Image 1 (spheres, rainbow, N blue to C red):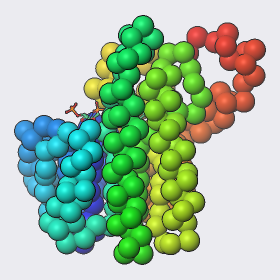
Image 2 (image 1 turned 45 degrees about the vertical axis):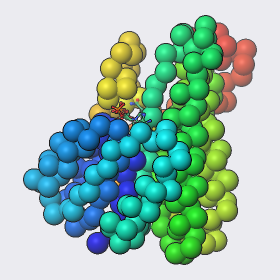
Image 3 (image 1 turned 30 degrees about the vertical axis):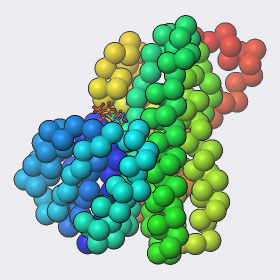
Image 4 (image 1 turned 120 degrees about the vertical axis):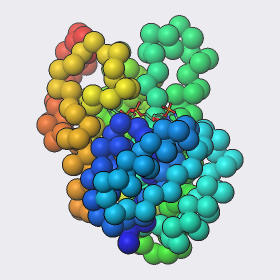
Length: 245
Ligand SMILES: NC(=O)c1ccc[n+]([C@@H]2O[C@H](COP(=O)([O-])OP(=O)(O)OC[C@H]3O[C@@H](n4cnc5c(N)ncnc54)[C@H](OP(=O)(O)O)[C@@H]3O)[C@@H](O)[C@H]2O)c1
């Protein structure tokens, strides 16, 4: 049975992914801040599939507790095959422009806590000679834009980190997958005015589950975002800086 550790066990995207995973015989270890939300997800998964589900409440910003968390999860599941990282915050861009001192939470949650836990799991997988690390970042990390560059810069930090980690682990049989969703209809984006090209979590989840088994290192979801971002990245500054997105 595949053993899967999910950080952000009740994020909307994770829930859609878990819905698909739970159809198989898998062992799941879900981590999130709120034990009651985790219990709801666990009970639902138990009712729809054949998976074995463990839950643990933790604020993942508490990086000093990461080693113990990994030990508990690997002990409980008797190993680990896949780490899926799918949590984060969308900070208020306008507020941080005026109060950059408050940006730490964004960088800590969206970048550093992820980097810390992924590093520990990378070492664990390296010692076993196998494993998959899949991390949800964002297309927002591809080019800084005025509407969300605090969030985007944290995500691009993780992108660059994962690229380096992939390079390190390439010859060791360990897969590192970067998953870049476009805009997804979740609580995180509930307050956004722009709804163009917004995908449902269920659509994105299909691509994510495929990515766990596939050969791609970087997956855009839905696929159209690969081409949208290609154009966005190629736009010369003289045009890009006049746009309003
Ligand atoms: N929605 C989009 O358009 C979009 C696009 C690209 C990438 N993403 C990425 O997809 C991932 C999942 O987000 P989502 O869209 O599914 O939104 P979501 O439902 O709001 O999920 C975000 C989750 O992160 C959790 N979280 C935040 N800080 C945490 C911490 N310190 N410790 C533990 N958990 C923490 C939240 O838990 P609480 O409820 O307890 O705060 C929440 O469950 C995120 O990495 C996000 O950046 C989303």
